[in-house]
Amino acid sequence: MGASLGHFNGDGQLDAMTVGAEGTPAQLWLGVGDGNFVGTGQSFAQGVSTIDAPLLEDFDRDGHLDVLLLHRNASSIILLGDGDGNLTPAPVSLSTPSAASAATGLFNDDLRPDIVVLNANGPSNLLNNQPAESLCD
View 1 (cartoon, rainbow, N blue to C red):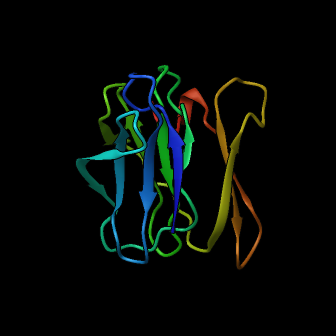
View 2: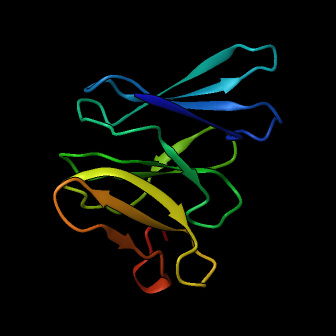
């Protein structure tokens, strides 16, 4: 369970990407500026176990915030933001069978955000976001 705050629709108000208890879908909520949020009606990853809060990063470098939903017993997914408050699953599947946590960062000096996955049962994985085998393009 968790939430992450970021700007998904360009209105200057903080928005929230939330994940609930196991099996509950992740949802995007748009901030209206008075402390309230409005649901977009978009739900993602219904019925799978999401770990921790969603990770927010501009994975495809288009200037719009994207989301990583890390799953323990299913493939993790990246949702690509369009800057208008809409998210679309990226055409990639990330195998994370024993994931415990993850972080994003620039790990190889190519200016493309990469993902490091910490595994509960084994070594950690570094998922490089490179043009030839990009996470998102």
